[in-house]
Image 1 (spheres, helix red, strand yellow):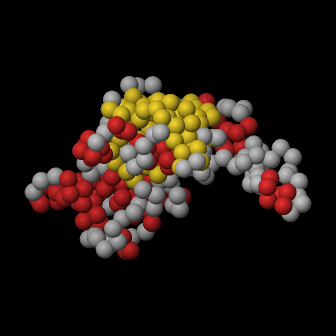
Image 2 (image 1 turned 60 degrees about the vertical axis):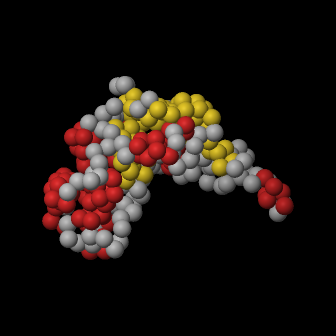
Image 3 (image 1 turned 90 degrees about the vertical axis):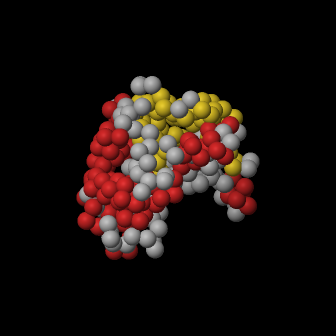
Length: 274
Protein backbone atom coordinates (compact mmCIF):
# COMPACT_ATOMS: atom_id res chain seq x y z
CA UNK A 1 0.00 0.00 0.00
CA UNK A 2 1.27 3.53 -0.77
CA UNK A 3 2.12 5.90 2.07
CA UNK A 4 -1.12 6.55 3.96
CA UNK A 5 -2.82 9.91 3.92
CA UNK A 6 -5.23 8.61 6.57
CA UNK A 7 -4.93 6.00 9.32
CA UNK A 8 -7.34 4.75 11.96
CA UNK A 9 -5.42 3.15 14.81
CA UNK A 10 -7.17 1.01 17.43
CA UNK A 11 -10.32 3.12 17.15
CA UNK A 12 -13.28 2.43 19.40
CA UNK A 13 -16.61 4.24 19.26
CA UNK A 14 -20.19 3.78 20.41
CA UNK A 15 -23.43 5.71 20.83
CA UNK A 16 -24.30 5.82 24.51
CA UNK A 17 -24.01 2.30 25.89
CA UNK A 18 -24.18 0.76 22.41
CA UNK A 19 -20.74 -0.12 20.98
CA UNK A 20 -20.44 0.36 17.21
CA UNK A 21 -16.75 0.00 16.33
CA UNK A 22 -14.00 -1.75 18.27
CA UNK A 23 -10.23 -2.05 17.68
CA UNK A 24 -10.57 -0.60 14.20
CA UNK A 25 -7.32 -0.39 12.22
CA UNK A 26 -7.43 1.01 8.67
CA UNK A 27 -4.95 2.60 6.25
CA UNK A 28 -5.83 4.65 3.19
CA UNK A 29 -2.96 5.05 0.73
CA UNK A 30 -2.35 8.20 -1.28
CA UNK A 31 -3.89 7.98 -4.72
CA UNK A 32 -6.01 4.95 -3.91
CA UNK A 33 -9.72 4.27 -4.18
CA UNK A 34 -10.67 2.32 -1.05
CA UNK A 35 -14.09 0.76 -0.48
CA UNK A 36 -15.53 0.34 3.01
CA UNK A 37 -18.25 -2.28 2.80
CA UNK A 38 -20.60 -4.22 5.04
CA UNK A 39 -24.24 -4.74 5.87
CA UNK A 40 -26.63 -1.97 6.88
CA UNK A 41 -25.93 -0.70 10.38
CA UNK A 42 -22.40 -2.12 10.59
CA UNK A 43 -20.78 1.30 11.18
CA UNK A 44 -19.65 2.31 7.67
CA UNK A 45 -21.03 5.85 7.81
CA UNK A 46 -19.74 6.22 11.37
CA UNK A 47 -16.23 5.76 9.93
CA UNK A 48 -16.82 8.82 7.72
CA UNK A 49 -18.16 10.78 10.69
CA UNK A 50 -15.00 9.96 12.65
CA UNK A 51 -12.76 11.04 9.78
CA UNK A 52 -14.63 14.33 9.37
CA UNK A 53 -14.57 15.04 13.10
CA UNK A 54 -18.37 15.01 13.42
CA UNK A 55 -17.90 12.49 16.21
CA UNK A 56 -14.71 11.71 18.14
CA UNK A 57 -13.20 8.34 18.83
CA UNK A 58 -13.56 7.21 22.43
CA UNK A 59 -10.24 5.41 22.11
CA UNK A 60 -7.54 5.32 19.46
CA UNK A 61 -6.42 7.80 16.80
CA UNK A 62 -7.80 9.09 13.50
CA UNK A 63 -4.70 10.47 11.75
CA UNK A 64 -5.27 12.66 8.68
CA UNK A 65 -2.05 13.90 7.11
CA UNK A 66 -0.30 13.04 10.36
CA UNK A 67 -2.68 14.93 12.69
CA UNK A 68 -5.13 13.29 15.06
CA UNK A 69 -8.59 14.58 14.13
CA UNK A 70 -9.82 13.86 17.64
CA UNK A 71 -7.37 16.30 19.27
CA UNK A 72 -7.81 19.27 16.90
CA UNK A 73 -9.39 22.50 18.09
CA UNK A 74 -12.06 24.23 16.03
CA UNK A 75 -9.49 26.08 13.87
CA UNK A 76 -7.47 22.94 13.19
CA UNK A 77 -10.56 20.89 12.40
CA UNK A 78 -11.81 23.59 10.02
CA UNK A 79 -8.45 23.56 8.20
CA UNK A 80 -8.49 19.75 7.95
CA UNK A 81 -12.02 19.70 6.55
CA UNK A 82 -10.97 22.09 3.78
CA UNK A 83 -8.65 19.31 2.62
CA UNK A 84 -11.57 16.90 2.45
CA UNK A 85 -14.43 16.59 -0.02
CA UNK A 86 -17.71 14.87 0.80
CA UNK A 87 -20.37 13.46 -1.51
CA UNK A 88 -23.43 12.94 0.64
CA UNK A 89 -25.94 10.20 -0.07
CA UNK A 90 -28.41 11.49 -2.71
CA UNK A 91 -26.28 14.63 -3.22
CA UNK A 92 -27.79 17.04 -0.66
CA UNK A 93 -27.90 19.96 -3.11
CA UNK A 94 -29.43 23.30 -2.17
CA UNK A 95 -32.80 23.14 -3.89
CA UNK A 96 -33.25 26.93 -4.12
CA UNK A 97 -29.92 27.42 -5.91
CA UNK A 98 -28.95 26.80 -9.51
CA UNK A 99 -26.48 24.10 -10.49
CA UNK A 100 -23.84 26.82 -10.93
CA UNK A 101 -24.46 28.35 -7.50
CA UNK A 102 -24.40 24.95 -5.80
CA UNK A 103 -20.94 24.22 -7.21
CA UNK A 104 -19.70 27.77 -6.56
CA UNK A 105 -20.77 27.68 -2.91
CA UNK A 106 -17.49 26.26 -1.44
CA UNK A 107 -15.41 28.88 -3.26
CA UNK A 108 -17.69 31.72 -2.19
CA UNK A 109 -17.60 30.56 1.43
CA UNK A 110 -13.93 29.65 1.78
CA UNK A 111 -11.96 31.84 -0.65
CA UNK A 112 -11.53 35.50 -1.65
CA UNK A 113 -11.36 34.74 -5.38
CA UNK A 114 -12.88 37.16 -7.86
CA UNK A 115 -16.27 36.40 -9.39
CA UNK A 116 -14.56 35.93 -12.76
CA UNK A 117 -12.15 33.35 -11.35
CA UNK A 118 -14.97 31.55 -9.51
CA UNK A 119 -16.96 31.43 -12.74
CA UNK A 120 -14.07 29.87 -14.65
CA UNK A 121 -13.36 27.29 -11.94
CA UNK A 122 -17.02 26.31 -11.57
CA UNK A 123 -17.42 25.81 -15.32
CA UNK A 124 -14.22 23.76 -15.34
CA UNK A 125 -15.54 21.41 -12.64
CA UNK A 126 -18.95 21.16 -14.29
CA UNK A 127 -17.24 20.33 -17.57
CA UNK A 128 -15.30 17.55 -15.78
CA UNK A 129 -18.60 15.89 -14.80
CA UNK A 130 -20.25 16.56 -18.17
CA UNK A 131 -22.74 19.16 -16.95
CA UNK A 132 -21.41 22.52 -18.10
CA UNK A 133 -24.58 22.93 -20.19
CA UNK A 134 -26.82 22.49 -17.11
CA UNK A 135 -25.31 25.35 -15.14
CA UNK A 136 -28.47 27.51 -15.13
CA UNK A 137 -30.89 24.73 -14.19
CA UNK A 138 -32.12 23.96 -10.67
CA UNK A 139 -31.82 20.56 -8.95
CA UNK A 140 -35.55 20.00 -9.62
CA UNK A 141 -34.92 20.33 -13.36
CA UNK A 142 -32.27 17.61 -13.64
CA UNK A 143 -32.31 13.84 -13.08
CA UNK A 144 -31.15 12.11 -9.93
CA UNK A 145 -28.01 10.89 -11.65
CA UNK A 146 -27.19 14.39 -12.88
CA UNK A 147 -27.78 15.79 -9.40
CA UNK A 148 -25.27 13.30 -8.05
CA UNK A 149 -22.72 14.55 -10.58
CA UNK A 150 -23.39 18.16 -9.61
CA UNK A 151 -22.78 17.20 -5.99
CA UNK A 152 -19.54 15.53 -7.04
CA UNK A 153 -18.40 18.70 -8.82
CA UNK A 154 -19.13 20.63 -5.60
CA UNK A 155 -17.23 18.05 -3.51
CA UNK A 156 -14.05 18.52 -5.56
CA UNK A 157 -14.33 22.30 -5.88
CA UNK A 158 -11.44 22.96 -3.44
CA UNK A 159 -9.25 20.20 -4.93
CA UNK A 160 -9.32 18.03 -1.78
CA UNK A 161 -6.65 15.47 -1.01
CA UNK A 162 -9.31 13.13 0.46
CA UNK A 163 -12.76 12.57 -1.06
CA UNK A 164 -15.42 10.64 0.87
CA UNK A 165 -18.48 9.10 -0.77
CA UNK A 166 -21.46 7.98 1.31
CA UNK A 167 -23.40 5.39 -0.74
CA UNK A 168 -22.58 7.08 -4.08
CA UNK A 169 -24.48 4.48 -6.14
CA UNK A 170 -27.74 4.42 -4.17
CA UNK A 171 -30.88 4.91 -6.28
CA UNK A 172 -29.11 5.30 -9.63
CA UNK A 173 -30.17 3.67 -12.88
CA UNK A 174 -27.57 1.42 -14.58
CA UNK A 175 -26.34 4.15 -16.95
CA UNK A 176 -25.99 6.80 -14.23
CA UNK A 177 -24.37 4.22 -11.97
CA UNK A 178 -21.72 3.42 -14.58
CA UNK A 179 -21.08 7.11 -15.24
CA UNK A 180 -20.67 7.83 -11.52
CA UNK A 181 -18.31 4.91 -10.96
CA UNK A 182 -16.16 5.97 -13.91
CA UNK A 183 -16.09 9.58 -12.69
CA UNK A 184 -14.94 8.54 -9.21
CA UNK A 185 -11.99 6.64 -10.65
CA UNK A 186 -11.14 9.30 -13.27
CA UNK A 187 -11.36 12.28 -10.91
CA UNK A 188 -9.36 10.49 -8.23
CA UNK A 189 -6.54 9.99 -10.74
CA UNK A 190 -6.79 13.54 -12.13
CA UNK A 191 -6.69 15.16 -8.68
CA UNK A 192 -4.08 12.80 -7.23
CA UNK A 193 -6.50 12.32 -4.35
CA UNK A 194 -7.52 9.41 -2.12
CA UNK A 195 -11.16 8.30 -2.34
CA UNK A 196 -13.16 6.40 0.27
CA UNK A 197 -16.35 4.69 -0.88
CA UNK A 198 -18.78 3.72 1.85
CA UNK A 199 -21.06 1.36 0.00
CA UNK A 200 -22.79 -2.00 -0.19
CA UNK A 201 -22.78 -2.17 -4.00
CA UNK A 202 -20.37 -4.97 -4.81
CA UNK A 203 -19.93 -5.04 -8.63
CA UNK A 204 -19.51 -1.28 -9.04
CA UNK A 205 -17.17 -0.88 -6.08
CA UNK A 206 -15.03 -3.89 -6.94
CA UNK A 207 -14.64 -2.56 -10.49
CA UNK A 208 -12.93 0.68 -9.37
CA UNK A 209 -11.48 0.00 -5.89
CA UNK A 210 -7.82 -0.71 -5.22
CA UNK A 211 -8.51 -2.09 -1.74
CA UNK A 212 -11.55 -3.15 0.27
CA UNK A 213 -12.32 -3.22 3.99
CA UNK A 214 -15.26 -5.39 5.02
CA UNK A 215 -16.81 -4.44 8.38
CA UNK A 216 -18.88 -6.87 10.45
CA UNK A 217 -19.59 -7.21 14.17
CA UNK A 218 -17.93 -3.87 14.96
CA UNK A 219 -14.55 -4.53 13.38
CA UNK A 220 -12.63 -5.36 10.22
CA UNK A 221 -13.81 -8.85 9.37
CA UNK A 222 -11.90 -9.09 6.07
CA UNK A 223 -9.72 -6.91 3.88
CA UNK A 224 -7.76 -7.10 0.65
CA UNK A 225 -7.98 -6.36 -3.04
CA UNK A 226 -11.30 -6.96 -4.80
CA UNK A 227 -9.83 -10.10 -6.36
CA UNK A 228 -8.79 -11.41 -2.95
CA UNK A 229 -12.24 -10.86 -1.46
CA UNK A 230 -13.95 -12.45 -4.48
CA UNK A 231 -11.81 -15.54 -3.89
CA UNK A 232 -12.57 -15.62 -0.16
CA UNK A 233 -14.26 -18.69 1.29
CA UNK A 234 -15.22 -16.88 4.51
CA UNK A 235 -18.98 -17.48 5.07
CA UNK A 236 -19.69 -13.87 6.08
CA UNK A 237 -17.91 -12.45 3.05
CA UNK A 238 -19.50 -15.00 0.72
CA UNK A 239 -23.03 -14.25 1.94
CA UNK A 240 -22.50 -10.54 1.33
CA UNK A 241 -20.86 -10.86 -2.09
CA UNK A 242 -23.28 -13.51 -3.32
CA UNK A 243 -26.32 -11.71 -1.87
CA UNK A 244 -27.54 -14.83 -0.08
CA UNK A 245 -30.72 -14.21 1.96
CA UNK A 246 -29.58 -16.33 4.88
CA UNK A 247 -26.28 -17.38 6.39
CA UNK A 248 -24.17 -15.93 9.23
CA UNK A 249 -26.38 -12.83 8.99
CA UNK A 250 -29.81 -14.13 9.99
CA UNK A 251 -33.20 -13.11 8.64
CA UNK A 252 -34.72 -12.90 12.17
CA UNK A 253 -33.46 -10.33 14.64
CA UNK A 254 -32.81 -12.10 17.93
CA UNK A 255 -34.67 -10.86 20.99
CA UNK A 256 -34.66 -13.64 23.55
CA UNK A 257 -36.67 -11.66 26.11
CA UNK A 258 -39.52 -10.92 23.72
CA UNK A 259 -39.53 -14.51 22.42
CA UNK A 260 -39.82 -15.79 25.99
CA UNK A 261 -42.66 -13.36 26.78
CA UNK A 262 -44.72 -14.83 23.93
CA UNK A 263 -43.71 -18.42 24.56
CA UNK A 264 -41.48 -18.77 21.49
CA UNK A 265 -38.12 -20.48 21.46
CA UNK A 266 -35.36 -18.51 19.74
CA UNK A 267 -34.41 -20.08 16.38
CA UNK A 268 -31.41 -22.39 16.62
CA UNK A 269 -28.11 -20.62 16.09
CA UNK A 270 -29.82 -17.23 16.04
CA UNK A 271 -27.50 -14.22 16.09
CA UNK A 272 -27.95 -10.49 16.03
CA UNK A 273 -27.81 -9.02 12.58
CA UNK A 274 -24.62 -7.04 11.92
